[in-house]
Length: 584
Image (cartoon, rainbow, N blue to C red; front, side, top):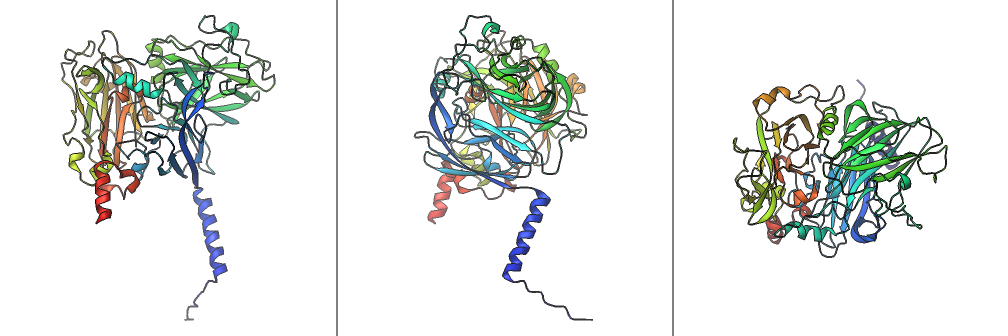
């Protein structure tokens, strides 16, 4: 047998080998690291033609759109240029597998980034879909800290639906009163409600006290026609399309309060994606979208080639005191300056919940999507109520209003700092005799910062139960968002959830979502698996409601979390621990 020859690689050969290996891995996996350097600061802008202070990123409002492919790593160097307040950014819908400290939730996953400091968010976008990001400290989302995060399908793979081009719409609501003043209003005694937004924004653009639609003014008022005088900040968005093509429209709602309905004049749409998960396609003339939700729709440009068409966004679920937001679908076969000759699509009646529920119940998982486990390990009931604590108006879950601690839960649980928050678990349910149709007989609640500690690898059911608020005959819509996971929406129902409702739950093709709504006086049933170690917020996505305590915290498998960056834990008791260790 001939002796083996020793192979020695010259430096050049080694470099070539490594380069070839790198090319092979890139082709095999198609993933990249996408780097961004961002500075968050206040700036002047005129989102609805009235100049105001907004929170921007690198001088942009809304913030820059992140584009990536599934499997990529996103790296954001975020520098806080605010002079007097901290900041964090939550990557809404990104599960943060293996990086729970990058979730961007102050007091839960990390410390707020102090003025002048930089924090590096590094995380993998594991699944294609429509996502967005926003501030998650105080009410900074209301101040304008948000932007889109679009994750395309992996290189070499195809979507289950065809389209020739795509557009992105980020929807938001806008107040002329600043976010800080709104916080004071909500925290005072008696509470001063912030009121309805002055305008609805589409990609950061709206119009206040004037109308784009002229003679077709959708609310029947005598508002003057908007004149922009070169002010492009509030000029309408125009989507330029070729006739007889198919387009994908990605829509995300970053609203602080408003539930919305979107329609494109004379164009049907097909729903194909929700919260980064594929749907059984179904056709609609319009669709509801709640705060925290994202959708993709497909539409065909098959209408009269000589016309343009309105895209309208209007308020649902609250008595609308805000005009529609409008954009224009421009057929390139006609001129851009030509206004649509038909009125904007009319938003459905704000309190037509039968219509809303009919749409919501049509949302089902695409064939072949993961099914939920048949049985659950633990079921938690969360009663949503409006309450008072020492005279202050609050929102509470099972009579506990969330009051976050100064030390992030992720660090305090990881390092065994039991004095950082209440070690007693919050209530798992509410008394069976509670009448959800009436104001609470005892409106008093308590503050709390306890955590639901969930066993890792188990199936958890959450029953969201809506109820009457403090005022009689008032029960509000609440869209609930879960960090770190998707959940299956097993069903919706009227009244109080009971055993007889078990048979209504859909275990065959329930949609996977990260945000789900509960309707007035109703319930919503969710199921998820605790397969992502970390500490995760679960809360109403209406900004004032979260500010007033409407949320809970889940913790699971924290012992499996790797080393947490020191920068995430530099405050509170974990900060003291780090300083002590460094000193020693």
